[in-house]
Image 1: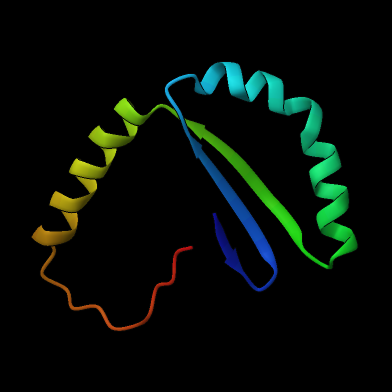
Image 2 (image 1 turned 45 degrees about the vertical axis):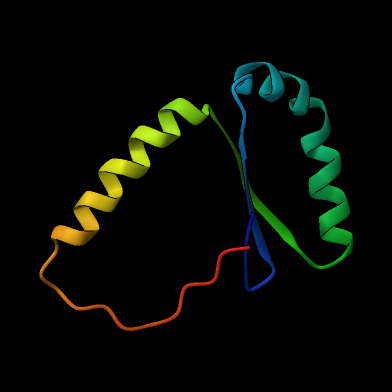
Length: 78
């Protein structure tokens, strides 16, 4: 889950991501409405399989270490 300026993005990583995504569709409207009552906004919910997530992370780490540019800043992930 990532929260920035009261905007929430949720990522669900599970090997049954397609099944969970189908079941969650019924609750996303309710989730959005209840977050809105608390002055938050749901920007999206992603459902990922851990196998494909692992491959993506490996490629991403390789790309980050191979960049020559410097980075300064703060990233917070909850």
